Image 1 (cartoon, rainbow, N blue to C red):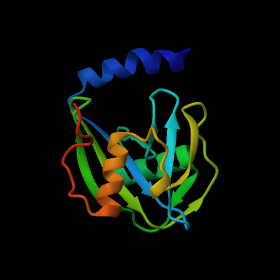
Image 2 (image 1 turned 90 degrees about the vertical axis):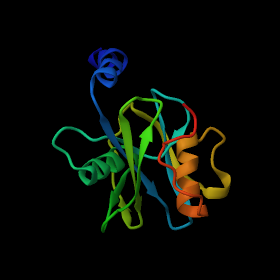
Image 3 (image 1 turned 60 degrees about the vertical axis):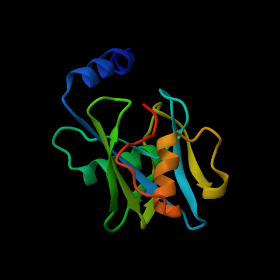
Image 4 (image 1 turned 30 degrees about the horizontal axis):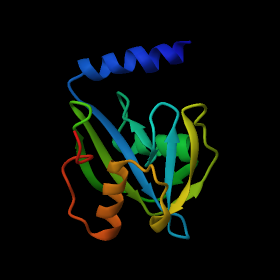
Length: 154
C-alpha cells in the first residue's frame, strides 16, 4: 500500500513542488553490440536504465545503484558523461546520461519496478522505445548532434 501511495500521490506532488530534480541514465552495450533497455511497471515503453539521484548521492553513485537494481550491471572503470538534458515533460527535471564501456553482470534487485530488461541490437530495437532513448542512442552511435532536451516533444 505504501508503494502505491508513494508512486501515485507523493511522486506527482514532489515533482510539482521541488525546484529541480536530477536523474541518471546509462548506455550499456554488450559484447554483441546490444543496448541494455528496461521496461518500467509505471510508464510505457523501453528506456535506458536509470533513475533519480537521491539526496546525498553523487550522479555516479546513483548510476551504479540504478544499473545494478534495474539491469544487473556493475560498471567497471569510469563512465563517460554524454550530456545533461532538460526534460520538458517534467518542469525542472534534468537527466545526466553516461556511457558505460566496461561492466560486469551482477544480480539485479529491481523487484516490481522493472517488468522486463534485455539487450537489443541497435538495428532491431523494440517498436516502443521512448523518443528520448532513441535520441540519446542516435547521438552516441550515429553522430546526430547532441540536443539540450531529453526529447523533442513537450
